[in-house]
Image (cartoon, rainbow, N blue to C red):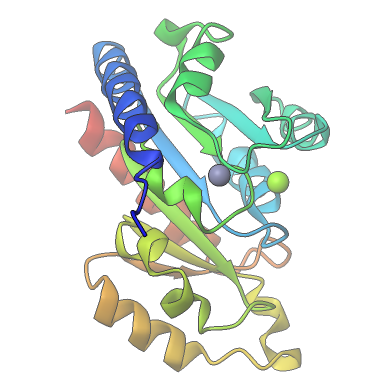
Length: 219
Ligand code: MG
Ligand code: ZN
């Protein structure tokens, strides 16, 4: 049986748009982060905490990707940061064209950092370049450490990895050593941040990394 490479033309079109997004961001010295994880691992909670620490010193915008509702954008907006919601109406990932459309809702001259909360999914968001400067992948302690091996693509190309909900470690069977060991094997260059958005533990190192990357990107 002949294999039909259906997604290749789609991905080629996406790549052209992603490159356009990237050069537009470069023109405005904006660092864009693409945050990916499965649903419920705590992306919005991580952002709420981070934005409360950062919004006084950095001009930030957030693009919220969800299949439906504006619930997460409303949570982000309550921190005082501008959030634009993209509803994919069934699609399980964001693409570069959606991000280009979201740009029109921002004044790009007044942004230093743009954070995308991708649709909760560890599979196809990994294939779609959005024009981001850095990719961040999050895994929570309520998921299995084996997710790194089950979804290698998203973890292999991550610039940083966050282990969230570490306050729950005493109550769940998450093997932190297996997780860090597997990460070091498949992607030794990505730093790992172990955080709790509830207690604030580990959040400062993650936020410092974000600030450092924003500086590097604007140089
Ligand atoms: Mg969310
Ligand atoms: Zn998808």
